[in-house]
Length: 259
Picture 1: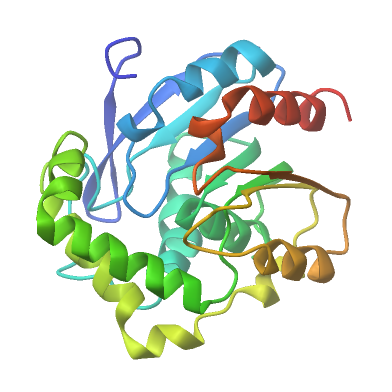
Picture 2: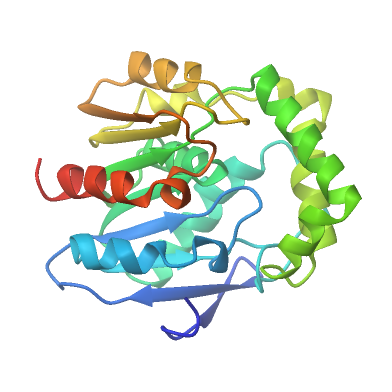
């Protein structure tokens, strides 16, 4: 991504954030893409370009503080780190870049952040919310998945993979995994925010997701008071946009253009 588009930095809440803005049709809302718990701009790979070619909206993607080449602004993540991102950092970034109309696309942690922001009654106009592999409460499968990731990191394979995407993969992984594995995090729940979402929602999940079950989508659908579409992909894991991009792009096109 950074080879094709200009990588920029902006100072937000005392730390630099790296971001890329992909131009699109000026009369369309900007799609903000929020990466997963161990993600960054670069982990999206070619998908943002594919999205741009599919829907022609402007696209903003950024690496959160402590990810990619963005600054660390805290010594460690606390259990409210996704709330802090949704209620402090994201509004400040949207304001700084003067975005008045947006769509949100979040993957995993990014989906939870998108749901919190959309349900916080922001002043920004939100025209749609796409939640891929979202978490709205903590399941046993989520903790088991993170414990497996911790083993993979300690064994070296995951660390080598993350080193390609983060300036400090050890600190990035430690911050994320320790927050999820704290006993207090078992009480984490954002369903109150989901109930306040006022824009249409598209839910995407793979049936074989090791970090969450379809109970997450069921809970969201039950809580929502707005139009909701759902795409569940058989044989697919935690990253449908990487594993079956054609299906995800088709769903996005219908949701954003065809509805």
